[in-house]
Length: 246
Length: 309
Image 1: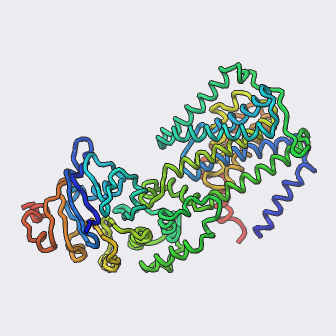
Image 2: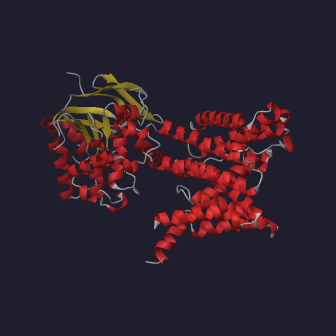
Image 3: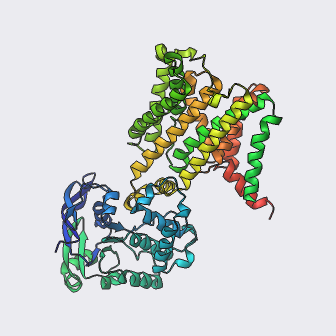
């Protein structure tokens, strides 16, 4: 079966400093993959290369067999690639519902309509509220993003990504900065994502994220140093070296 | 309540020429034109977050084209008006394509440079533009045989066109496309990741904004029956931008109010006060200090705070 994501020889350097150094990895369809690594390992850069936010210096990215390396970010989104951000980049003045509507519009032809009022797109708004319901935020749909808690913003991030019905979902530190209770809530949410969606997740914190993943890739200085099942990776001395420095 | 306010506004606008003298009716016509011009720029600046200092290109290009077609080729308004709009809009498509290769200050500088090219051309290419003397000897159109030479007649003509234009721009802003446009202003990278084609959204807005700027240009040349290179100057672009910022960028009423302030200070106060430029500067400093996001948002906030409950 064609893998959901296949990366070959991906390279990106910033001013001569390699952030992603010849990374190759393959994620089968439906898998939950965890990418871990210390600060500066190149995890977010890897995501930016996959989504096209950054241009790779070399290498290819394939989404379900299709080479998307040359595509613009919005074209990649139309092929079923969605992501969340480590640093929350929502639209703070707009309501939760409007944020999700913008996400729905991104993959709908309606976004080109310049004549009819957006408020008249009742189906779109109903869908947005339903998706907010999936992450437990339906009651807050009309609130501006700026007025809800950090944990709720994290949920909106995930709602916006899920709204696009992606085939491949990239989650960039979805648990970062959350309290224990919030973390378990988000974890349950991620666990509940349908199996048709392949999930690649960056997490800094191994303990909380390990049980979400089937396979784990360890990045260090832009290189893949270990890859395998949870127990393989945890047992591998190189993982310990990277994380504990001995 | 809302409809009552709109009705009152419409009624007073329609009744104004019956009570106001010619001077004020003409001033109002000019405010309409300036309001349309500033509103068209506001699509780009306020809703797209793309600050342009070259918007004079559209008012000037449409005005010059219409004037030239009439004077040199003897075309009637029915032919020259669409041709002027087409030429200006096509140029906006080209200029937008060039300018949108940059963003932020780079975008501002390119729009400025391109408009300056047109301004320089208007000055130097005397064979076509009559240089510093400008093109004169123009007429106003006579839609359905109605002469627009009387101030009140032109007032209603301008009012009708500007009202339709503002209505269409309001629809544009409230549409899904308008929502996407505001999204690209706030978080362009995010919008791209969500599947929005940020560049095309901006380019379409640039062209649409140029089109309405050109409509303002037609009204401008009809009103003055004259066009001079200053129409294309940086001052002309800057005045519109000043109107947008002073009134409130990214609001529908803001540029209308802002353009009115600029025009009233320019036309009315200058009759009594020689240093009107100084006064204009002072007024804008006060606006920026007390209502940094413009008069309309500022007044709204003040109303919410001190207005009747």
